[in-house]
Amino acid sequence: ARQPQPLLMGTRVRVQRVRIEGGTIYPLSELRDNYQGLLDREVTLGELIEATRRLTQRYQQDGYLLSYAYLPPQDFAEGRLRVVLVEGYIRDYELQGDVGPVSAYLDKLVGKLKAERPLTRKTFERYTALMSRVPGLTLQAQV
Image (cartoon, rainbow, N blue to C red; front, side):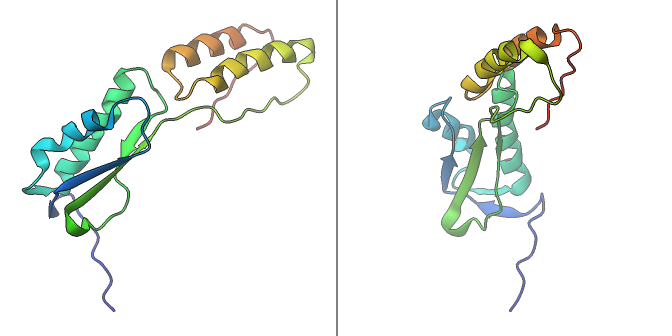
């Protein structure tokens, strides 16, 4: 059996429908409008990626620092384009070492961070700034 060829930026496809999965912040119809000018004609994969990048830029400009859009692997069968939205949040955290009585305070601050889904830059910066004021505490974030 022949192996499918990898899609390159210049690969041309015809898109007739857009399916957007995973978003909660913006109306899906509004996000689909981002692709309106690319429907029902041949476009390059690069053009589709650029349109998807604009969705990520919107999240970033609106302060959702862990949120983005991407195109998963797909074959564009029947003219379908699939776009996935990831709206990031803090799932868990880890305290290393004995921080003593301040651990309850840190738990409260982290609770504020975990409660916001998706997490905004404003909330992240506010609560990490408060945490960084605790003497002897070093913060490290991993995505």
